Image (cartoon, rainbow, N blue to C red; front, side, top):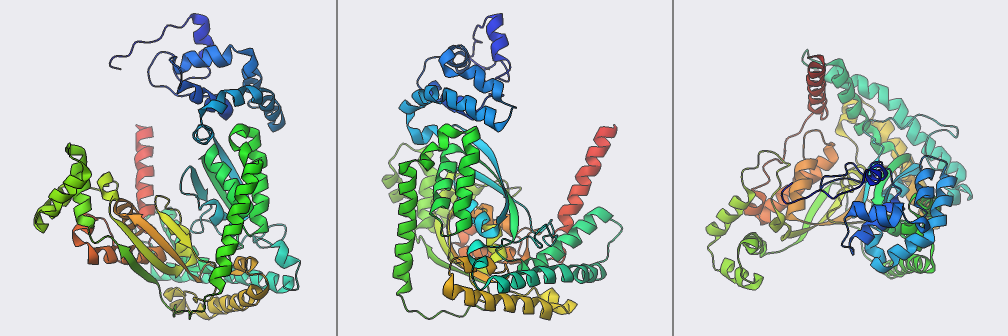
Amino acid sequence: MFGYYPEDFTPQERALLQPFVTNVDRPVFCLRNLPEVVKGALFARYSRSTKSLRRLLLDEFISEPESGFAAIVSAVGESPAAQLIAARQAEAFYERVLIGYGDDSVAELGGAHLACEGVSNIAAKLLEDSRLGLSPLEKSTRYVRFDLPGPDGYPYLREPVIMGSPFAARYVAGMDRLFATYSALLAPVQAWLQHQFPRDETTTPRAYRQAIQAKALDMLRGLLPMATQTNVGLFGNGRAFEYLIIKLAAAPFAEARALSEAIQTELDYVIPAFVKRARSERGRAYAAYLSATREQAARLAAQIDAELPPGDTVTVQLVDYDPQAEEKLVAAIFYPHLDLPLTAIRELVAAMPDHERQTIIAAAVGERVSRFHRPGRAFEEPYYTFDILADIGAYRDLQRHRVLTQERQRFTVVHGFVTPPELELIGVADQYRAALEQAAELVTDLERHFPHEAQYAVPFAFRIRWRVKLNLREAYHLIELRSARQGHPSYRAVAQMMFRAISAVHPALAAGMRFVDQRDYDLERLAAEQRIDQKRQQLEQQNGS
């Protein structure tokens, strides 16, 4: 690479380094085969040293007996207990390295992959609420059946507070009925779909089978309660995990608090130095603060006497936006190309005629040939706030977007539920509604005694209200992605309504969203499955050539 001169290492030094770096002589390289505590401490030291990273690794870690480097590295691949013992033996050294570098930022230098299995959807939403530092992946309700019983029966959480109350038998009966209905309706729904949409010769049996199953599971997922157990995988840095542990400890659910302890225990095996404060007095005080402020706000809100508006439909209301969005956007577009202060640029832009500003916006959008071509950071200037009422299933999908502010209300049955119209045509809508109505009665009774725990019994078909604040650039991403053909109809409708709302107030800003799909489809996943088959065929041809 231009201007780079490889560092001189002796043959012995090269041999010591090679297991831990992807190359010894190029300016760009990765660390490997190192525990997170070593990588974090190494990068912390790197920020305040004249030495190269490889030289630091040699001089201050590999060759420093006090670091415990040899013991920690040799423990990798051994039992978790061996790894923990080795890390704790060296912890004093690494704390001395880390202590002078700003704890918060240094905690982002170590990361971990964490699996949380058999957690309820209540817990899954808490795990996935984090915006920064954590990347979650959850078992899909579209590709995986959730009616396969385990040792205790259908896979839902037997919530301990409810199971220790007089409602235990009703709770089990209600949850069992939801899963039994889900299981019983799956075959007739799939049969109807196959009859309604027969496979053509251009579609492989695999793609057709996957599309039919995805559509059937999409139509029936409304029966699954929030108690449904799922698996969530997380990758994140230590700082984000520390905050997650604290937030879970402050949650009003026993499951969340137990999960907080379990996550802390497991991360202590791999990144103990980066999450130790979650267990400290500071961490406990922070959790207590979060819990207290939540309860105080809830008590004050309970004093408000207001009538609930009708909630018999999906609503997406644009409640706030910047009337000067176009002017601020154009000023932001110009800002990196001028030497003027932002206030002066805004004054110049304000004096421009509308058509000139719109020409500049169109130029900044450019020729987008796919939805992956999103315009630059200037488009983060305009903001929009939406109030959304839609089914919980749609919320679960839209919650995954993290470069925005989302906050939900409680999971409840007061807003009614959504029935997929196809179930009426199939003739199974009455069974579907009966199971949901019985669940609603259970939730209503539980809420009088256990307002938090009652949320476990709420099925996905019921509506929830949540607010979303996002900038225009993120709106491009969310709306174009979630309106795409392969998406679930419920969240596609939300994305389409968001687009129409922005278009109504800022047509020039929405004009660049060229990949918003406003059509309706029958088998949403079919085209995507066909593309998968095409890619498989191309790969097979390449491997065979």
